Length: 121
Image 1 (spheres, rainbow, N blue to C red):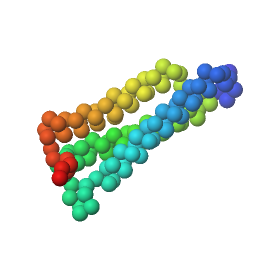
Image 2: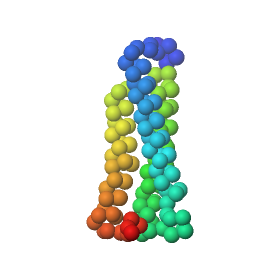
Image 3: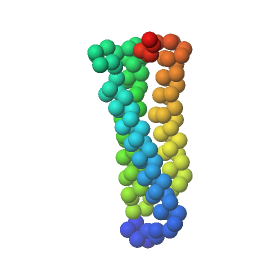
Image 4: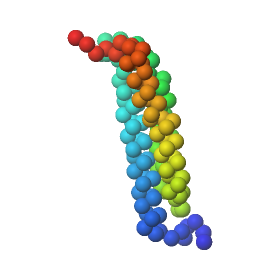
């Protein structure tokens, strides 16, 4: 059976939808993080120590998220989408490599190192 005549069973359609939703999820995170990086700092141009510390990890995270978004969307568009097992592994790799470390990095610099994040009176 060629890839172009791959049967479109309900499970295949559900997988396509899941891949596409994961692509939108990664793209949304990438867009919001890129806006956070691009709009970092105060209107007068000053940047706090906290923002300086998390700028590079956030930049890596949003660029990687764009790559994962492209992977998920193109996987959904393939004539024969990858298996559900590959989808679960791709989501796990995405979350463990790009999403979770950013939360821990932000927490570390804000609460353990106690860098000035500009919040105050």
